[in-house]
Amino acid sequence: MRAYGQASTPTRTPRGTEYEVFARVTRRLVTAARLDQTTGFPELARAIYENRRLWILLAADVADNGNTLPEQLRAQIFYLSEFTQAHSQKVLTGKAGLRPLIEINTAIMRGLRNEAPRSGVASSEGTTR
Image 1 (cartoon, rainbow, N blue to C red):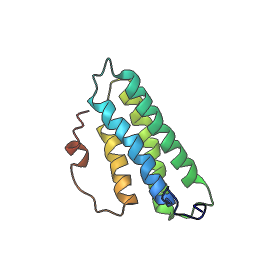
Image 2 (image 1 turned 120 degrees about the horizontal axis):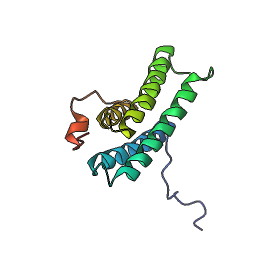
Image 3 (image 1 turned 90 degrees about the horizontal axis):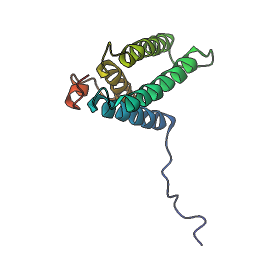
Image 4 (image 1 turned 120 degrees about the vertical axis):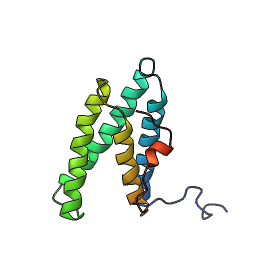
C-alpha cells in the first residue's frame, strides 16, 4: 500500500515559494538582457510584464492593513514597486537598461534566503543593460 508513502513533492514554505517566483522572473530578465534589443523585444516585453505583475502584487500586499511586516519594510517594498514600474517603462522605450531591475530582484532573493549583500551580483551574471 503506497497511499501513505512519502510525498513526491517537497513541501515549500511561503518564503521559499516567494523566492522561486523571484528566481523565475529574474531569470527571464537576465535572459532578455542578453538578447538583441530589436529582435529580442517580445521576450523583453514579456519579462518586464511578469516583473511588473510581481511587484504590483507585492505593493498590494504591503499596502494591506493586515500585513504583519514592519511598517518601514512595507514602505520600502512599496517604494521599490513604484520604482520598478517607472523604470520598466524607461526600459521598454529604450531609455534605460534592465540591470537595476535585476539587482533589486537579486537583493530581494538574498533577503528571502537570509544572505548578506554582495556587490556586483547582477554584473557577475553577465547582464549588460
